[in-house]
Amino acid sequence: MSATTRSRLPDGFEVRLRDDVLRAEGGRVLVGGSPTRVARLSDRARALLQGARLVVDGPTSAALARRLLDGNLADPVVDGIEVSADDLTVVVPARDRVEQLGRCLAALAPLRVLVVDDASEDSATVARVAKQYGAGVVPLAHNVGPAGARNVGLALVCTPLVAFVDSDVVVDGPTLLDLARHCADSQVALVAPRVVGNPQRSRPRWFERYDAAASSLDLGRIACQVRPGGAVAWLPSACLVGRAELLGDGFDPELRVGEDVDLVWRLHAASLTVRYDPSAVARHDVRSTVRAWLGRKFVYGTGGAALARRHGANLAPASLSLTMAVGAAAVLQRRWWSAPVAAAAVAWSTWGLRTRLPLGRGRTVLAAWLSARGLGWAVRQEAGLVLRHWWPLAAVGAVGSRSVRRILVSAVAVDLVMFLRERPGVDLPTVLLARRLDDLAYGAGLWWGAIGQRSARCLAVRRPRATRRGLFRVASSDT
Image (tube, rainbow, N blue to C red; front, side, top):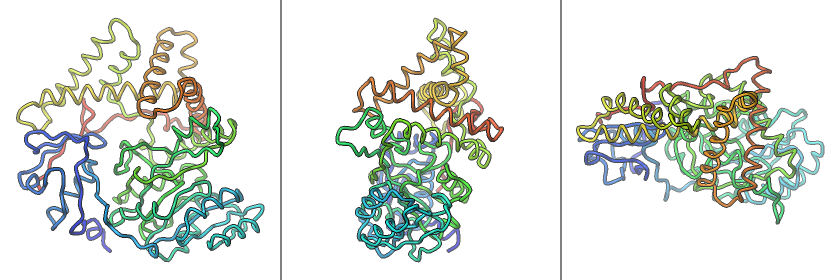
């Protein structure tokens, strides 16, 4: 199938504008997406939309639907699409952990499953458990890591669709088939569910409660198209469904961590679509000890430098214009001059943005709203920088600087408010302790990897490219 043919959405395919998209000038202008963009629709394009709904019935509507999906202004409607279990093979990389493997395989029945035994110490027991649940087994003589093991399974898949499920994940067959419905869009190479923490104790300990609510693999409740710089920029390899022919050789076996991020960004660079669908849920076992929990956070951090070497600014921990960086820093300082500086930053961004908005009336109000929202996002990003990515520098600076200490206190407050708003249900003391330990462990791993690679690229902030002063992309549709 050629790239042009593959990108064409089939007739009958439906998309819906996202609930958070703002419509102005009678629906001619759409504001939203991730990254945020302002799009002006032609009269012809606006006529194709039936309220918030668009059904593909030819090349013109297919092109508009594709633009809306690519801009994260709309989501696909996959309800009612049927996928046969015969079209899907599940690859499970495993290395011992037979109890977890058994729970994983029990949930996957009756799908076709292939267990790749990555040189287990007790390979006989792994084979016995796999056989018990009707799964095939491919034993490896040498340990190649999760990426290499998945690739071995991928090479043996004969079905058009493949799922990768880690042995410490529980997800059932119907959920994987629901995810596979996204592949009705032949441009979709990969799709993932929401992966939530799954404590094994009936009374989870404090760090297990935190991980159940804020697993590093949990990317939130909002569906979207995955792309660098977007609301969801990567997918965890713990549970994925994809179109086998579009995955090529699969994961990079040289990467023992971050191989999932690398694959997603390579697929995006190849103009393929990657989606996140949190309506489907997989459960990932949380670590059973504090040492294992923090150790995994550290390991995740160590992969940052290698990914930055391959993908450059895609891994930047924040994307900030100079204007918004100054405004956000002023807010975190909480000084008498903070409000005037923040207001000046919003005003400057508003002035630069309003002339680019495709609006006849109300452009100043919309520009001010976007700029104020951009300042809020900049404050949140800077809080994350000083608490997570740059904490060694912040810790040193706090020793001799009252201003740095003030910024740290503000950052903790901002982070706490946002966490409790987005992930309710965890008690305050647990959040205060676990959140900071999470950041310290990941940040330490990030710096360790940067030192090992002799590159600080994974710590560098990216400046937005869309506009000189603002944070927003302005687009139009002539469809």
